[in-house]
Length: 143
Image (cartoon, rainbow, N blue to C red; front, side):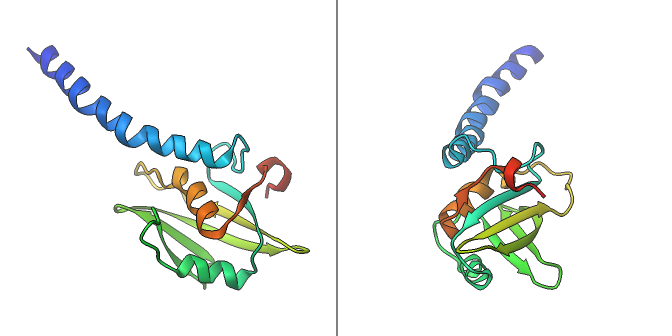
């Protein structure tokens, strides 16, 4: 009987949750990156090429849209962005390095929080759509 209940729970509840929530998150992440890895092996650091100044980046991140999957709050004193979704969040130090005609946006996770979160997998689609960012190889622009 216990095996039957476990099987029922597994096939009726857990598999649909994984297929309906988790798999689409990973697919969207992979589609946006196009095979380019713009993060370190633990997904704690990200790099992007953007054609915006520091102030334009801040203005766009502070603009709330109905289609944004993540919300963000910026702490200018600490240079930290908090990306949030459904109660879970991740904090990232941010740096905008202005170059000749473009900028490099660097994000580094402040600390690993114990709870599970899909925020790291939603950062790439969010930043690409919000800032019209280009995914660039982490190995070339690592920090």
